[in-house]
Length: 451
Image 1 (tube, rainbow, N blue to C red):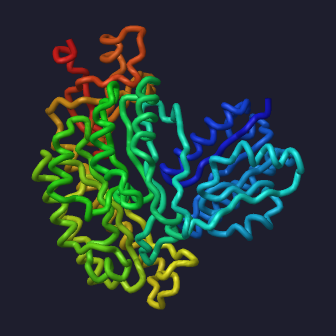
Image 2 (tube, helix red, strand yellow; image 1 turned 90 degrees about the vertical axis):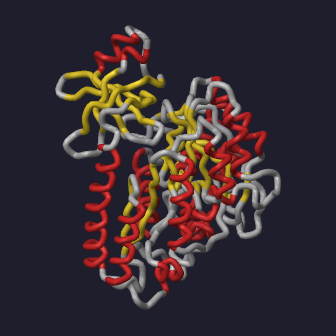
């Protein structure tokens, strides 16, 4: 039995695809082992990322690390970095098999072929015209309590800073029935929470007219055993009155919405080739707050995009305050070879990017803590995810429906569950405090409610 170690880089879609390859390999008789120095594997698979030039470099570093762990092992380069620079990867002496996107389903065949002829093999297709969805599946995930389900691939947006449409290809949607079958299987395996995800999730169904995103959500909602449904990053334009109204009728859908923004300045949005205005974005947030009581709205923001003036940045900062996000992921603009923005002449100095990033990170911390504080004194349902030790005392941690992390004393939960595991249980918790950093709520088991 050959040993395989898989290392994943990048997004949740990549994670799903790594877990899918793991399932294929297990079914073919391979043993899955950790990617570390303590276990020597026969095969190393690096599922690469290419979202930035730095991601490319990390991908190369991990490929070379794999070969150093065992010079006789077969090293497989898979994923986005392969798609972005297939010729460069083929020339890399550390790599034995090159496996592009939409080809990961062939991992077992690729290894079989390599063992037969020992020649470097390449499996890379042109995704610019490929409309076939790669039908990968999973039956378990490495996160014990939350399963990410890939239902869509590809992107047609071509934002000026982004390489993803070139390495992931055009939009492709998974058949609804296949999604339902997989979620049912995960439910039978004990998973209570699923996250529907994709490269451009909002485009689901646009390519095949077999359904829409809201129809997939409604179908998953009917599956017994699934108690929580979360959504990956959404495009602001999908937030219509009809969409949110139908969503709000599904009580399993968590009131936690990640709406991609990138900039709060209309000029910068236009330069980024984003397809909405700040006014349209604001209207979407208003709709979510119309149908949900204080939903957790999170977003991504890029600072230092080419041509972003101080005035543009100030406009963005004010817009962020006006929206009042629960959490924001702040990124300094990173040039990506092959994109339109990389060729723009008015690049921003790194020092200015760092200053603007620090300013927004401080704002994010302040707004995020303020949102959490509003729940002190309330009762919330928490999905328990793991047990940890703090100052020699046992605690459990988990997340609320609106994705707030909660810390609960272990002895409180142990009173309820005894020797049985509380992991993956949804319990009622009284929120009594917030930690000094303002990023974790402190709770105690609401015994009366549980009984």
